[in-house]
Length: 299
Image (cartoon, rainbow, N blue to C red; front, side, top):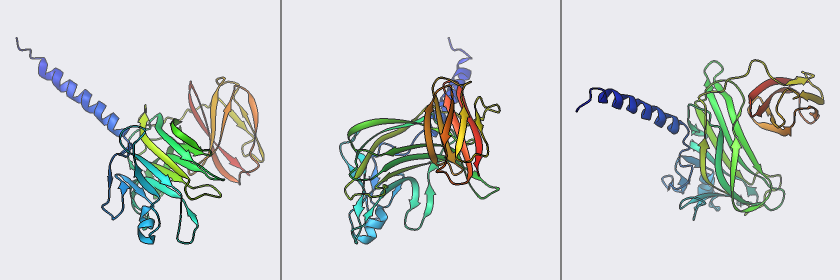
């Protein structure tokens, strides 16, 4: 027998599925598996990413960012390789999510997003000879119409200092910087960023994706840790005695760049800040019970 409740059920199911799809879409990294590439500008670039291959196109030197196979997952992966320019000077390789003309700095760096994932996950491998560095950076921002700039809401950073010849899974916690909901996520991949980069050093990346997430970051109004003195000079005391036995402590500048990171227990610890210039900073503490953020100054 036909049930009059069925249309209501189907409508409810539709909205549930639509909401779930919207949440998943908000956590999707466009072409994060690097399967799709195009040559619409005269050189091969991954879809939904911008690279400094545009400089190679005009100079005639080797391309920094190339499509390679087989992937760690799927058919292809992205290789970022430090190359030498026409004068023999090593040049870093860079790929940025979004449609940005690296030559004119025109376009959009990043892709739309309305939530903050818990982690960014992927696989990488590297060859690093000499004092070189590879980077994976993920930054969530929001337009500030009052100031005409972008506020950093959350970020995740990975600095790779040693060679890793086999595919290695990485999982980076996305650290909140400020309260609010982001509107853009920008992922930047870089090879050859060290103080003495070597042509031929590379970073391979594949299978980028997000896990978990919340629509926004809510700041705790009563931090469970204390820092002093604030403003600080060369030394800073952080009291985590009311926290968990394991706490992820991170220090950021006001632009959302990760400066320092420590794993600290439920103790009072003195941190050496002598190397930091005077200015404003943000300290973030994360453990199984939650997340806390506190601003501090250095004289």
